[in-house]
Image (cartoon, rainbow, N blue to C red; front, side, top):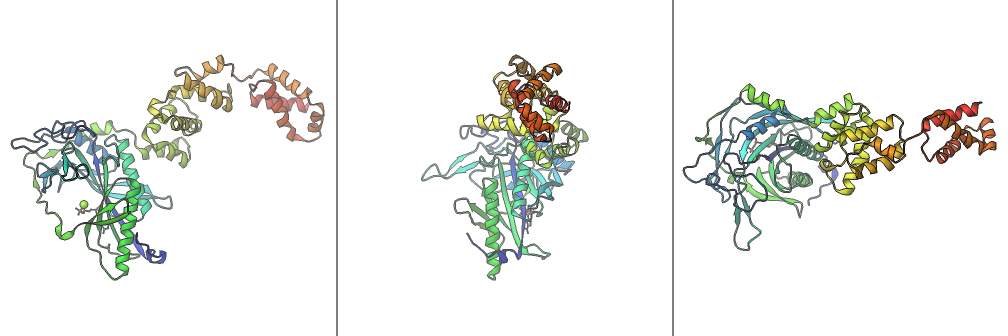
Length: 488
Ligand code: ADP
Ligand code: MG
């Protein structure tokens, strides 16, 4: 790792643009009926079409276009109405056809944006240059045989979306947050599982530096092979310092493609610009141009799932939740969907948020359960919140007694449990008054002290009422009754 002094690093401005490849969650491949499945027996999802045998013809998978429209709408992109497909030619063992079908001059989406937090927690716009449809190559495996490279072609032809950002990213935090936002977005949209370790979401980082205040970007290097958000950040940090080191020593940056080594945390040259591929793009002759009609876009729009940003705005503006609460709730889509359903059945949004972020999340963590398998339905949780709000049970009885019993007895309502377990708060006036009188009778001298001005003794009397009532006295009513008795 190259370490520069802080005052040297501070002279430079980092500039980053990210290219993200997202494997689509379609059932079959982009142009063939083969299964699109991670972890199948190697080379089992490989029809003659995937293998590029002569005489086979690609057939377009409609879902691939729908998914591209989804992300285009979610990022505010312009959708291209008439587009072509192109062959990107190169010779490589994991590419049986010798080319990838991609989009060259007519990407399906252009000119969008996402918003991410910068290092000061402010919203920052990152432009999306384009999103296009592409197909994946197979996978070369170098570490399973000491002499040979093995190849698994199951991945060949799996549909990809390539999402290219503008060089708008200016810090390591922004790069991390941008990628996290893209991952969350594709998960919300159900178009990619976002798993970076398995390679279903991959990211190439284009990195350059320039002196602060400069108007022209420096030469960039493209870094590949990072398999986690954290490693993308590490790779960019190393690359930034490497470039600054070269510039400080009077050198210049050669545009090249580099690879990240996660063990050493450094990057090394894969190929320089001179050996960059000439892909000889030309129009794919076996696919017709694709035309998007208003109707195609409308259909996708109608079926759009809620988006994290929309939910965030709704929670902070309409439901009156704090920014912190809103962020925690939208972080994972299944949690957000549970909360959505819960708020359809209760108006006490703050209580609903507290239950989801508190008791429910800690139950899920402790038992390693996903929210989809959480035993208490949102309607039943709403029932629990309702009986607290109606003062039928206290908050502490709810968390300590009723909630655990609801977990053990799925389907039983909070009210049923509270009734059958004799946990309902007593709000009966005469009964409460009787208990309050008993409590005061036990401390005649303290009552006198209260009347002489020691108002802090109210807590002692309340405690006595709780003890005598088996903690079932309605505390609000009990304290009112106490005060009245003490004023007499
Ligand atoms: P290529 O086809 O060579 O990959 P693109 O025009 O598609 O080139 O750009 C790739 C990425 O590089 C984009 O994400 C863009 O934002 C980014 N980029 C372009 N110039 C710079 C630069 N000077 N510094 C950092 N990133 C850059
Ligand atoms: Mg590139």
